[in-house]
Image (cartoon, rainbow over all chains, first blue to last red; front, side):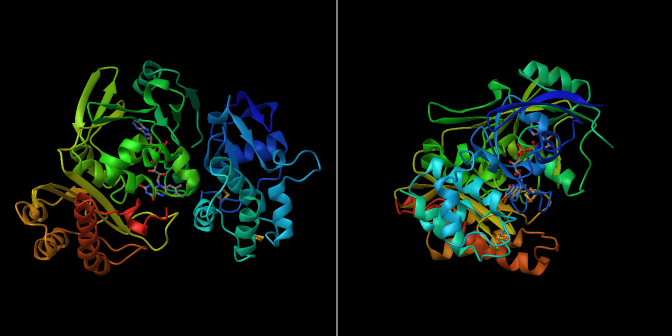
Length: 152
Length: 298
Ligand SMILES: Cc1cc2nc3c(=O)[nH]c(=O)nc-3n(C[C@H](O)[C@H](O)[C@H](O)COP(=O)(O)OP(=O)(O)OC[C@H]3O[C@@H](n4cnc5c(N)ncnc54)[C@H](O)[C@@H]3O)c2cc1C
Ligand code: FES
Ligand code: FES
């Protein structure tokens, strides 16, 4: 059975037809066509798929897309203003927070959620907020420094 | 099996009608959907999403008692001022569930109904005498949390019953509590071994005590022998040691990928002691940061 639904992603409404078991990640990548969010583990361990749902971080691989109908979804594509990187994105480049880049979309989304809640996090706050995002390249230091560099 | 039907309930009545017709509820999906992704169990054939039912959300206070809607999330619970001040063990527990994303969407109703013997909030809720309201199209009933757990992953609720709310009575004057788990990392973890203590102090002596063990038996449960060792004592070293030993003696742990039976048994005493010491310290007005498990860094 397919269900017709409308997903609001980065402020745009997208009509989609989904099997009810479809994850938000698959809906956004394959039906909406925004492929910035990645699939690492597909079961809530790695955070590569992290999106914001009404402003709160969600593991999109393990969230039913139909539960997101009528809510605001934000992906990494929604963090920049066109080609203009957000200060956080620029800081990731500056501080060596990006190597292969696979974890980066999820890291940026989790860090954006943290900074919205707490504009002046401590290093420990940053590490706790990013604990659900795994990175196998950077050793995390560049990422943590990048987030702290845009904290107020 | 693929999901044949999905509905989103707007009201409790909608949800109850769907459950009566054989649907399973999904709230945050952090157990149900994650379990399906991990291959533990396929998604149910019929799903009713309850995450928009306004009647099921929110945390409120009435005469010092705590009322949690089934949809109260771990992040809402862990940051709620009354929970932190008076129901501290529950704040300790919700503060360490999963990651930020897990806490933002995972609910108290889902945590309880998933009924893992290692889940975080069951010990605190039992020690704080909480009850849940179960409702179906046939009526509603209150069930003490201790009687909700039927075994690993099983509750005593009927399939058509919705957990609507969790009520926790006002703790007696002078009561303090703590929940501590053994964890290999601070986040993205679930208790290897856990213990809860709630103590009521009157004039320097322990007038009432509650101790519960987590991930040490088929269900989270209280340990009356540990409680007896603390009650009417001065809460000193000898009483704490006796209570912790009683908690370990009551354990019947299993071996799994996370720990062997022997290791769990050995750690039961250590973790029970830490939980009791943290509750006593809070009762004496000393600062033990939330969560008690990781020195307040969660
Ligand atoms: C990465 C990760 C880490 C985690 N870490 C922890 C941890 O540290 N400690 C811990 O305790 N848990 C942990 N969990 C488990 C989970 O997040 C919690 O148990 C959470 O509270 C479940 O709530 P939910 O709303 O997401 O439940 P759902 O997945 O929506 O539902 C869980 C079960 O309860 C049923 N249900 C849900 N709501 C109701 C209701 N109102 N009435 C009747 N039945 C209902 C569902 O049908 C389902 O069977 C973790 C999960 C993940 C993915
Ligand atoms: S892909 Fe979603 S958490 Fe790993
Ligand atoms: S940069 Fe490669 S996983 Fe993080």
